[in-house]
Image (cartoon, rainbow, N blue to C red; front, side):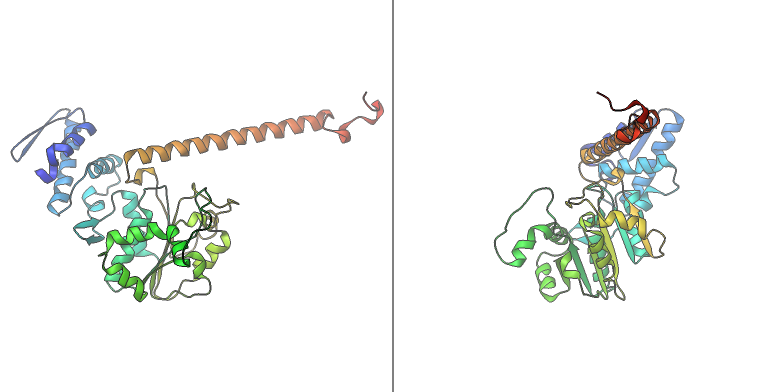
Length: 341
Protein backbone atom coordinates (compact mmCIF):
# COMPACT_ATOMS: atom_id res chain seq x y z
CA UNK A 1 0.00 0.00 0.00
CA UNK A 2 2.91 2.35 0.66
CA UNK A 3 4.23 1.67 -2.84
CA UNK A 4 0.77 2.17 -4.31
CA UNK A 5 -0.22 5.32 -2.43
CA UNK A 6 3.23 6.83 -1.92
CA UNK A 7 4.99 8.25 1.11
CA UNK A 8 2.58 10.42 3.11
CA UNK A 9 -0.12 9.42 0.58
CA UNK A 10 1.36 11.68 -2.11
CA UNK A 11 0.25 9.40 -4.93
CA UNK A 12 -3.20 9.16 -3.38
CA UNK A 13 -3.38 12.95 -3.49
CA UNK A 14 -2.48 12.82 -7.19
CA UNK A 15 -5.28 10.33 -7.87
CA UNK A 16 -7.80 12.51 -6.01
CA UNK A 17 -6.62 15.55 -7.98
CA UNK A 18 -7.11 13.72 -11.29
CA UNK A 19 -10.59 12.49 -10.29
CA UNK A 20 -12.12 15.14 -8.01
CA UNK A 21 -15.60 13.62 -8.30
CA UNK A 22 -14.50 10.40 -6.60
CA UNK A 23 -13.92 10.08 -2.87
CA UNK A 24 -11.07 7.66 -2.16
CA UNK A 25 -11.07 6.20 1.35
CA UNK A 26 -8.21 3.96 2.51
CA UNK A 27 -8.36 1.75 5.56
CA UNK A 28 -5.67 -0.87 6.07
CA UNK A 29 -5.33 -2.80 2.83
CA UNK A 30 -8.75 -1.80 1.51
CA UNK A 31 -9.62 1.08 -0.81
CA UNK A 32 -13.22 2.29 -1.00
CA UNK A 33 -14.34 4.45 -3.93
CA UNK A 34 -17.47 6.59 -3.79
CA UNK A 35 -18.86 8.76 -6.56
CA UNK A 36 -20.41 8.62 -10.06
CA UNK A 37 -20.31 5.09 -11.43
CA UNK A 38 -18.32 5.98 -14.56
CA UNK A 39 -15.67 7.89 -12.61
CA UNK A 40 -15.44 5.15 -9.99
CA UNK A 41 -14.84 2.59 -12.75
CA UNK A 42 -12.02 4.73 -14.14
CA UNK A 43 -10.33 5.07 -10.77
CA UNK A 44 -10.72 1.32 -10.18
CA UNK A 45 -9.01 0.60 -13.52
CA UNK A 46 -6.25 3.07 -12.67
CA UNK A 47 -5.57 1.53 -9.26
CA UNK A 48 -5.49 -1.97 -10.79
CA UNK A 49 -2.83 -0.84 -13.30
CA UNK A 50 -0.78 0.92 -10.62
CA UNK A 51 -0.97 -2.16 -8.40
CA UNK A 52 0.39 -4.29 -11.24
CA UNK A 53 3.33 -1.93 -11.64
CA UNK A 54 4.07 -2.04 -7.90
CA UNK A 55 3.92 -5.86 -7.85
CA UNK A 56 6.45 -5.90 -10.70
CA UNK A 57 8.88 -3.81 -8.67
CA UNK A 58 8.11 -0.42 -10.21
CA UNK A 59 8.76 2.54 -7.89
CA UNK A 60 5.81 4.78 -8.69
CA UNK A 61 6.01 8.56 -8.97
CA UNK A 62 3.39 11.25 -9.41
CA UNK A 63 4.41 11.46 -13.07
CA UNK A 64 3.66 7.74 -13.50
CA UNK A 65 0.17 8.24 -12.06
CA UNK A 66 -0.50 11.21 -14.34
CA UNK A 67 0.72 9.35 -17.43
CA UNK A 68 -1.37 6.28 -16.50
CA UNK A 69 -4.44 8.51 -16.24
CA UNK A 70 -3.68 9.98 -19.68
CA UNK A 71 -3.19 6.55 -21.25
CA UNK A 72 -6.49 5.26 -19.87
CA UNK A 73 -8.30 8.42 -21.03
CA UNK A 74 -7.03 8.20 -24.62
CA UNK A 75 -8.46 4.71 -25.07
CA UNK A 76 -5.43 3.62 -27.09
CA UNK A 77 -5.84 0.06 -25.83
CA UNK A 78 -2.33 0.03 -24.37
CA UNK A 79 -2.22 -0.80 -20.67
CA UNK A 80 -0.22 1.64 -18.52
CA UNK A 81 1.43 -1.33 -16.80
CA UNK A 82 2.75 -2.41 -20.23
CA UNK A 83 3.87 1.04 -21.39
CA UNK A 84 5.50 2.11 -18.13
CA UNK A 85 6.75 -1.27 -16.97
CA UNK A 86 9.62 -1.85 -19.41
CA UNK A 87 13.01 -1.72 -17.69
CA UNK A 88 15.86 -0.80 -20.01
CA UNK A 89 18.73 -0.60 -17.58
CA UNK A 90 19.43 -0.89 -13.85
CA UNK A 91 22.51 0.78 -12.41
CA UNK A 92 23.41 1.56 -8.83
CA UNK A 93 19.84 1.07 -7.68
CA UNK A 94 18.48 3.34 -10.41
CA UNK A 95 16.22 1.96 -13.12
CA UNK A 96 15.96 3.61 -16.55
CA UNK A 97 12.61 3.06 -18.22
CA UNK A 98 10.29 4.94 -20.61
CA UNK A 99 7.87 7.16 -18.71
CA UNK A 100 5.37 8.02 -21.45
CA UNK A 101 3.71 6.29 -24.39
CA UNK A 102 5.79 8.36 -26.81
CA UNK A 103 8.98 7.31 -25.07
CA UNK A 104 7.92 3.67 -25.17
CA UNK A 105 7.31 3.92 -28.94
CA UNK A 106 10.73 5.56 -29.31
CA UNK A 107 12.47 2.76 -27.40
CA UNK A 108 10.62 0.11 -29.41
CA UNK A 109 11.66 1.83 -32.64
CA UNK A 110 15.33 1.64 -31.60
CA UNK A 111 14.93 -2.12 -31.14
CA UNK A 112 13.23 -2.58 -34.50
CA UNK A 113 15.21 -0.26 -36.83
CA UNK A 114 18.82 0.34 -37.80
CA UNK A 115 18.58 4.14 -37.91
CA UNK A 116 16.21 6.07 -35.63
CA UNK A 117 15.70 9.81 -35.43
CA UNK A 118 14.46 11.01 -32.04
CA UNK A 119 13.02 14.49 -32.59
CA UNK A 120 11.45 16.36 -29.71
CA UNK A 121 11.69 19.19 -27.19
CA UNK A 122 14.10 19.54 -24.30
CA UNK A 123 13.45 17.06 -21.51
CA UNK A 124 11.57 14.51 -23.60
CA UNK A 125 14.21 11.83 -22.88
CA UNK A 126 15.42 11.38 -26.45
CA UNK A 127 19.14 11.44 -25.61
CA UNK A 128 18.92 9.76 -22.19
CA UNK A 129 16.91 6.79 -23.48
CA UNK A 130 19.21 6.41 -26.48
CA UNK A 131 22.18 6.29 -24.10
CA UNK A 132 20.41 3.65 -21.99
CA UNK A 133 19.76 1.50 -25.07
CA UNK A 134 23.41 1.86 -26.10
CA UNK A 135 24.68 0.72 -22.70
CA UNK A 136 22.15 -2.14 -22.72
CA UNK A 137 23.35 -3.26 -26.18
CA UNK A 138 26.98 -3.16 -25.01
CA UNK A 139 26.22 -5.21 -21.89
CA UNK A 140 24.34 -7.78 -23.95
CA UNK A 141 27.31 -7.93 -26.36
CA UNK A 142 25.06 -6.92 -29.26
CA UNK A 143 27.74 -4.34 -30.18
CA UNK A 144 31.42 -4.10 -29.28
CA UNK A 145 31.57 -0.34 -28.71
CA UNK A 146 29.56 2.82 -28.16
CA UNK A 147 30.31 5.99 -30.12
CA UNK A 148 28.81 9.26 -28.90
CA UNK A 149 29.15 12.43 -30.94
CA UNK A 150 27.67 15.89 -31.31
CA UNK A 151 28.51 19.02 -33.32
CA UNK A 152 30.68 21.62 -31.54
CA UNK A 153 28.28 24.53 -31.97
CA UNK A 154 27.81 27.21 -29.34
CA UNK A 155 24.27 27.90 -28.14
CA UNK A 156 23.83 31.57 -28.92
CA UNK A 157 26.98 32.91 -27.27
CA UNK A 158 30.66 33.04 -28.14
CA UNK A 159 32.86 31.07 -25.76
CA UNK A 160 36.08 32.46 -27.15
CA UNK A 161 39.41 30.64 -27.01
CA UNK A 162 39.34 27.88 -24.41
CA UNK A 163 42.57 26.98 -22.61
CA UNK A 164 44.19 23.55 -22.51
CA UNK A 165 44.63 20.67 -24.92
CA UNK A 166 42.27 19.74 -27.74
CA UNK A 167 40.43 17.40 -25.35
CA UNK A 168 40.03 20.24 -22.86
CA UNK A 169 38.67 22.54 -25.58
CA UNK A 170 35.97 20.15 -26.81
CA UNK A 171 35.06 18.82 -23.36
CA UNK A 172 32.36 21.50 -22.66
CA UNK A 173 30.51 20.51 -25.83
CA UNK A 174 30.54 16.81 -24.90
CA UNK A 175 29.89 17.17 -21.16
CA UNK A 176 26.14 16.29 -21.39
CA UNK A 177 27.09 12.93 -22.94
CA UNK A 178 29.62 12.24 -20.20
CA UNK A 179 27.01 13.10 -17.56
CA UNK A 180 24.43 10.71 -19.01
CA UNK A 181 27.06 7.99 -19.33
CA UNK A 182 28.03 8.43 -15.69
CA UNK A 183 24.40 7.98 -14.64
CA UNK A 184 24.16 4.59 -16.30
CA UNK A 185 27.51 2.97 -15.59
CA UNK A 186 29.81 2.53 -12.63
CA UNK A 187 31.86 5.77 -12.50
CA UNK A 188 35.03 3.71 -12.06
CA UNK A 189 34.34 1.79 -15.28
CA UNK A 190 33.78 4.82 -17.50
CA UNK A 191 37.43 6.00 -17.65
CA UNK A 192 38.59 2.43 -18.35
CA UNK A 193 36.09 2.00 -21.18
CA UNK A 194 37.08 5.37 -22.63
CA UNK A 195 40.77 4.49 -22.46
CA UNK A 196 40.16 1.13 -24.13
CA UNK A 197 38.08 2.69 -26.91
CA UNK A 198 35.00 0.65 -25.95
CA UNK A 199 33.26 3.96 -25.38
CA UNK A 200 34.25 6.88 -27.56
CA UNK A 201 33.05 10.45 -27.16
CA UNK A 202 34.12 12.79 -29.95
CA UNK A 203 32.95 15.86 -31.89
CA UNK A 204 31.21 15.26 -35.19
CA UNK A 205 34.19 16.55 -37.20
CA UNK A 206 36.12 13.42 -36.17
CA UNK A 207 33.66 11.15 -38.00
CA UNK A 208 34.71 11.98 -41.56
CA UNK A 209 36.48 9.16 -43.39
CA UNK A 210 35.50 6.46 -40.90
CA UNK A 211 33.35 3.33 -41.25
CA UNK A 212 31.64 2.46 -37.97
CA UNK A 213 31.19 -1.32 -37.73
CA UNK A 214 29.68 -3.26 -34.82
CA UNK A 215 28.88 -0.07 -32.92
CA UNK A 216 25.96 1.74 -31.31
CA UNK A 217 26.36 5.32 -32.56
CA UNK A 218 24.49 8.30 -31.10
CA UNK A 219 24.49 11.75 -32.68
CA UNK A 220 23.19 14.30 -30.18
CA UNK A 221 22.05 17.89 -30.89
CA UNK A 222 21.61 16.95 -34.53
CA UNK A 223 19.64 20.13 -35.25
CA UNK A 224 23.04 21.88 -35.26
CA UNK A 225 24.43 19.81 -38.12
CA UNK A 226 24.56 21.21 -41.62
CA UNK A 227 22.98 19.15 -44.43
CA UNK A 228 26.48 18.15 -45.55
CA UNK A 229 27.45 17.01 -42.03
CA UNK A 230 24.27 14.98 -41.66
CA UNK A 231 24.89 13.18 -44.97
CA UNK A 232 28.51 12.55 -43.94
CA UNK A 233 27.46 11.10 -40.58
CA UNK A 234 24.74 8.80 -41.95
CA UNK A 235 27.11 7.37 -44.55
CA UNK A 236 29.51 6.26 -41.77
CA UNK A 237 27.13 3.36 -40.99
CA UNK A 238 28.87 -0.01 -41.08
CA UNK A 239 27.89 -3.66 -40.64
CA UNK A 240 26.33 -4.70 -37.36
CA UNK A 241 25.82 -1.11 -36.26
CA UNK A 242 22.85 0.93 -35.10
CA UNK A 243 22.46 4.71 -35.20
CA UNK A 244 20.26 7.02 -33.13
CA UNK A 245 20.11 10.70 -34.08
CA UNK A 246 18.51 13.07 -31.57
CA UNK A 247 17.65 16.74 -31.78
CA UNK A 248 15.11 19.52 -31.43
CA UNK A 249 14.35 21.39 -34.66
CA UNK A 250 13.10 24.40 -32.67
CA UNK A 251 16.54 25.01 -31.12
CA UNK A 252 18.87 25.49 -34.08
CA UNK A 253 22.06 27.38 -33.14
CA UNK A 254 23.63 27.41 -36.61
CA UNK A 255 24.37 30.94 -37.92
CA UNK A 256 22.74 30.15 -41.27
CA UNK A 257 19.79 28.24 -39.80
CA UNK A 258 20.11 25.54 -42.51
CA UNK A 259 19.71 22.47 -40.30
CA UNK A 260 20.61 19.01 -41.58
CA UNK A 261 18.01 17.52 -39.24
CA UNK A 262 15.24 19.55 -40.83
CA UNK A 263 16.30 18.51 -44.32
CA UNK A 264 16.69 14.81 -43.52
CA UNK A 265 13.07 14.58 -42.34
CA UNK A 266 12.06 15.36 -45.94
CA UNK A 267 14.71 13.29 -47.71
CA UNK A 268 14.65 9.91 -45.90
CA UNK A 269 11.01 9.50 -44.88
CA UNK A 270 10.25 6.68 -47.34
CA UNK A 271 13.27 4.43 -46.69
CA UNK A 272 12.74 1.14 -44.85
CA UNK A 273 14.65 0.50 -41.62
CA UNK A 274 14.80 4.25 -40.91
CA UNK A 275 12.30 5.52 -38.35
CA UNK A 276 11.39 9.05 -37.26
CA UNK A 277 10.13 9.18 -33.66
CA UNK A 278 8.34 12.43 -32.93
CA UNK A 279 8.28 13.28 -29.22
CA UNK A 280 6.14 16.16 -27.90
CA UNK A 281 5.66 18.24 -24.77
CA UNK A 282 3.55 15.35 -23.42
CA UNK A 283 6.77 13.30 -23.27
CA UNK A 284 8.71 15.88 -21.23
CA UNK A 285 9.77 14.27 -17.95
CA UNK A 286 11.59 17.21 -16.39
CA UNK A 287 9.80 19.74 -14.19
CA UNK A 288 6.15 20.12 -15.17
CA UNK A 289 6.85 23.73 -16.16
CA UNK A 290 9.18 22.57 -18.95
CA UNK A 291 6.28 21.08 -20.91
CA UNK A 292 4.27 24.29 -20.48
CA UNK A 293 7.26 26.37 -21.61
CA UNK A 294 7.65 24.18 -24.72
CA UNK A 295 3.95 24.59 -25.56
CA UNK A 296 4.06 28.35 -24.99
CA UNK A 297 7.01 28.79 -27.35
CA UNK A 298 5.32 26.52 -29.90
CA UNK A 299 2.15 28.64 -29.80
CA UNK A 300 4.23 31.82 -30.14
CA UNK A 301 6.09 30.45 -33.17
CA UNK A 302 2.81 29.42 -34.82
CA UNK A 303 1.33 32.89 -34.29
CA UNK A 304 4.47 34.54 -35.64
CA UNK A 305 4.41 32.36 -38.77
CA UNK A 306 0.70 33.08 -39.25
CA UNK A 307 1.30 36.84 -38.92
CA UNK A 308 4.17 36.68 -41.39
CA UNK A 309 2.00 34.74 -43.85
CA UNK A 310 -0.78 37.34 -43.57
CA UNK A 311 1.69 40.21 -44.08
CA UNK A 312 3.15 38.51 -47.14
CA UNK A 313 -0.32 37.95 -48.60
CA UNK A 314 -1.32 41.56 -47.94
CA UNK A 315 1.85 42.81 -49.63
CA UNK A 316 1.22 40.53 -52.61
CA UNK A 317 -2.36 41.79 -53.02
CA UNK A 318 -1.14 45.39 -52.76
CA UNK A 319 1.45 44.82 -55.48
CA UNK A 320 -1.16 43.23 -57.75
CA UNK A 321 -3.49 46.17 -57.18
CA UNK A 322 -0.72 48.63 -58.04
CA UNK A 323 0.05 46.77 -61.25
CA UNK A 324 -3.62 46.73 -62.27
CA UNK A 325 -4.11 50.47 -61.61
CA UNK A 326 -0.82 51.45 -63.23
CA UNK A 327 0.68 52.95 -60.05
CA UNK A 328 3.38 50.37 -59.57
CA UNK A 329 6.37 52.44 -60.75
CA UNK A 330 7.56 54.01 -64.03
CA UNK A 331 6.70 50.98 -66.09
CA UNK A 332 3.08 51.29 -64.98
CA UNK A 333 2.55 54.96 -66.01
CA UNK A 334 0.34 55.96 -68.93
CA UNK A 335 2.73 57.48 -71.52
CA UNK A 336 -0.07 59.72 -72.89
CA UNK A 337 -0.22 61.62 -69.59
CA UNK A 338 3.43 62.52 -69.63
CA UNK A 339 5.49 62.97 -66.49
CA UNK A 340 4.04 64.08 -63.19
CA UNK A 341 5.11 67.28 -61.50
